[in-house]
Image (cartoon, rainbow, N blue to C red; front, side, top):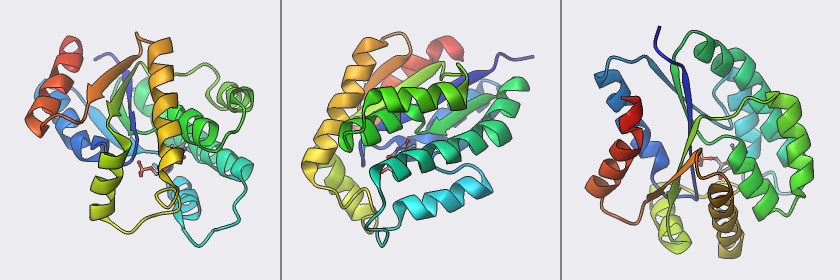
Length: 206
Ligand code: TMP
């Protein structure tokens, strides 16, 4: 049986992680490995319903702690229904955002204390963590411009630039604290260069 691997993709808006997901999957499938692609918030029927609440820009009064709890409610369902079974059967799980996003957005961005997030992480994940996290790092202004061209702004994308600067700093801080799990991808480079960076990072698993 192939070795299960839990890979998460993180970064500020517009850093390109979602569009590079197919490329990353392809590298593994070409090597003959079974891969599933999923995302957070979402990844299950219930999780996608929770995602709609979280991203709906009409939900103006949503409390920061409600937002955090909804992220972890969706995550609990996702872990039980999708992630854990896939890992148990030896598959490679590639997840577009995971708990580092809660630390970066709800912690760094919204200002919720890290210790609260830690309690939820311990409860919901019971020690399960990604094996590898690719942090797609990019200048916030460039990222927001790219994201803005793609679609109408969701509830998060309507925040100001300082919110996203705090998120970027928090991600980079986390990456520096856990250099074995995190790999930083410079998303400011050309697409070809970004793909090369990804390939280099994944080489040992292919
Ligand atoms: P996406 O745009 O990458 O699909 O993610 C949806 C939004 O959800 C994005 O703005 C980041 C946010 N998010 C959090 O705030 N906390 C989390 O824990 C996760 C997984 C996502």
